[in-house]
Image 1 (tube, rainbow, N blue to C red):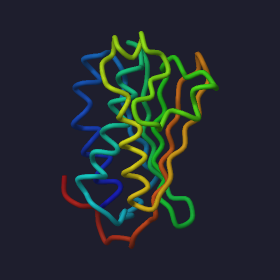
Image 2: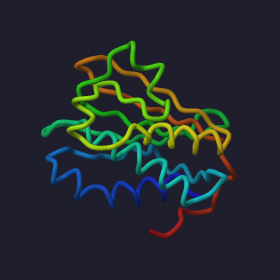
Image 3: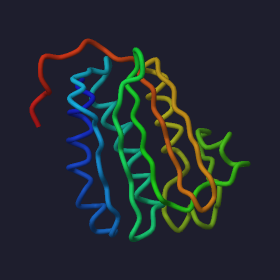
Image 4: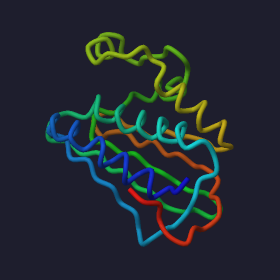
Amino acid sequence: VGAEYIQKKLVRQLKPLAEGANVVLSLVIPEKLNLTIPGDAASLRRLFSNLIENGLKYTPAGGHINVTVNRLWQEVTVTIADTGPGIAPEHLPHLFERFYRPDEARSRDRGGFGLGLAIARAIVEAHNGRIEVESELGQGTRLIVYLPAGAVTAASEPS
């Protein structure tokens, strides 16, 4: 599955949702990477859609979500960085647990069951990758996905 293709398609699909929330959603892909991510295309789309939608859920109007695709050695890295409220340090180790919601009242207002990041982690692990989170209160959150890079493709897949 073309890494660049997935990200461009998803960002294009989610842009109207972001615009409706008055959030700027941008994609940064340095040069033409032409990388593939071996694995199930539907699962990978679900993974990145889930992470971007999660950022949209918590980023206030006027905020930004930046999706960056890059290559680090033999891995494709996808970073979703938002300008949301951030997450307290004591919650970070538990974010990928099923049904975990750092702030019940806030989570209830925004919907969901605390499964999104657990599902994301399961998809990443099924693709022999890893996912990390960096966050500070008042500074936003960064989710970084590391997946094995596949073969270099001759050209990007069609959109």
